[in-house]
Image (cartoon, rainbow, N blue to C red):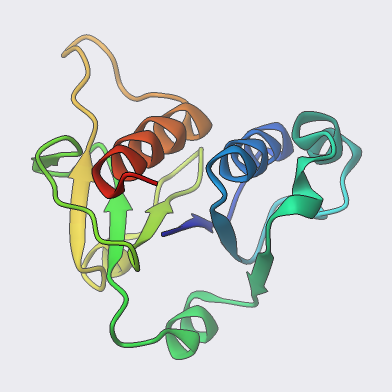
Amino acid sequence: MKLVIFQPDIPQNTGAMVRTCACFDTDIEIIHPCSFPLNDKLLKRSAMDYGSSIKITEHDSWDTFKKSLNPKKRIILLSTKGKIAHTDFTFQKNDLLMVGRESAGVPTEIHEQVDEVVTIPISKSSRSLNVSTAAAIALSEAMRQLKK
């Protein structure tokens, strides 16, 4: 299991996801462009010293990320547009759980290229969870299923 972050917008959220992944012993793939340098002090403040305990792989673009993939890995997009609840989805150990940009998610053409789109059910009066919170919830469920 790895977390894939598509073109992150906010360094504090990315830092929180780095910390979450370190706690779950899960590596990260970051697809550029980012709206901030990955050495940003806000990223480091929220990630604290956790970033050194996991592998963070950077990709210049969606295309370079896709070319780097092992065909046995599934890309599971976490989105408010998903039809399958994260608790009803069966995660596999080689899955890549992907989150989109805080401001815009992922473009439609990326939605069409992933293997599955899952969602975290929330109240009808809410738009979405914070991306780092959503990533933590979905990773927690995946780890529970995988007993990791």
